[in-house]
Image 1: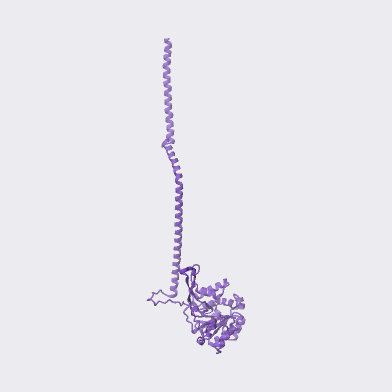
Image 2: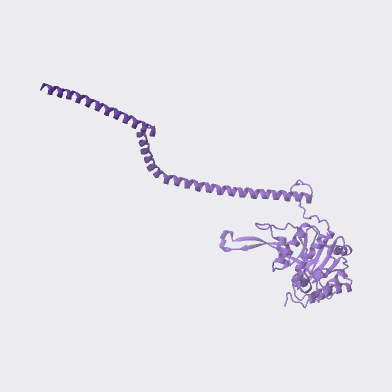
Length: 433
């Protein structure tokens, strides 16, 4: 019993020590594992595990918050984009405006420099009411290379570097005979017929009339020159006149349906690029008037004032050899080559239309001739022949431009003014039949 107890006691004693040993091993292992896990977490989560979770929580909350703010931010960005677009458009407009101002400034500078070169040094303005601008542009330097053959003829024919020029083909042969016959009677020597066909050249040569004809090899406008009607031939003159001006000569361009009663060179002012007779028949229509247009629907502003002027006649005008004059001829010739237009309409449009967007007007000076001295046939047959005082006037020329029966009326004018037949004009109606 005692032995058993000893064994039991021994066993108890051994069992207690084993248990204590085993528990100590487990604690050591737990501590080791804890240290190991701590090292692992310390390595992978240096800022702490709960901090990461806290940040994730914060991040999740921010995502939720940002989703609410995104729409507001988009609206703000849209608003800013619209504002930036408007500012950009405004800047573009300002750039365009500045660019246009710069262009105009450069153009003005260029024009000013050209004006100084042409007119001389800049001048100061004088006292009020004493300033008068010059309208007489300088003539070009003659260039005989433009047409040496024509230049030799003009040296013989022209007086003071000016002459009368007409274009004619065989269609106007009889009118041409009346034309140069009366020029000779007046005593004018500086005139020239631009013969457009051989028949006219032969006629002029036989009657001692100065003429010029292009060489047979020049076929640039042969068909129109030989067979063209009045308007077709009239369109050619602007190209032809250019050579005269290039050579430095002033030209009094004349249609053939004109009767000369005095020397026109005695009545010219020569102060403008173009000096032309008018299709007007009184002071208003010839020299211009204020025409009021009435539009009742506009109420208080129903009356609009307009300026009216009857056109210059492109069949009789004096043109000086200046740059604006040559530019006028070029403009008209170019348009007539492209358009189916009346030369007189184009002539006036280029001479009078002002500069405007898309179009640069011609800067040529002009003068309207005295409509009683340089008379059209409407003025003669509607007014002058019926007025006892006006019948006593002796015009410089009479242009039968308003009537188709040209030859008969030309002969009637000669009979009345040259041959003294007082009733020579009575049988003609005012207008055409």
